[in-house]
Image 1: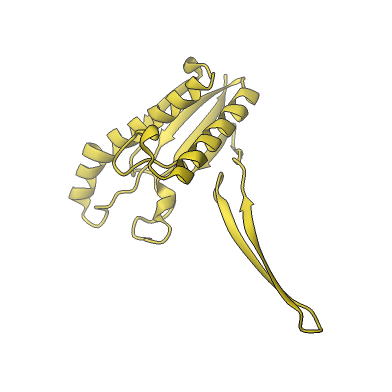
Image 2: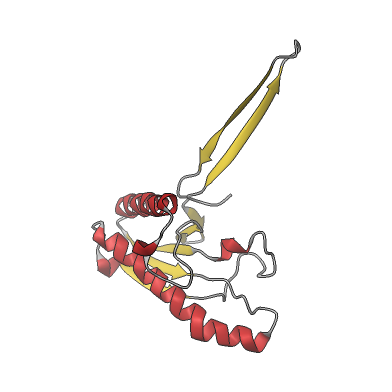
Length: 170
């Protein structure tokens, strides 16, 4: 289950008399704060950027843009609540050249680290615009160095394109 995701659900029902009904809807999942040792962590795969871009304002899909805004607003609320923590925003990406180690290393250095850095900076700017203190937030781009699923898993590798927030007590 991914944080800040909406999951579609459909339920088919049939009683003993043969009456049938189908109900469908969406189950929204809020931002999840996970404790790992002495730090708190939030992992979000649903902040959407245009391909090869770090421009949150250029998201063309209206639903994705609205979801970005709701997610960042919710993060702002959470980070305001956890005001005694500093926040490190980590940008992550997918390495598409994973099958060729030389090309993968080049892609990591030339494309993924700069892109994931710029994306983490864009999320920071959005949070600062909502009133969070800039000094509480640091950013880093990790590119494809820490995948959560194998790059070759075409169905799930979207989960590697994510922003993680690490909260550390001051």
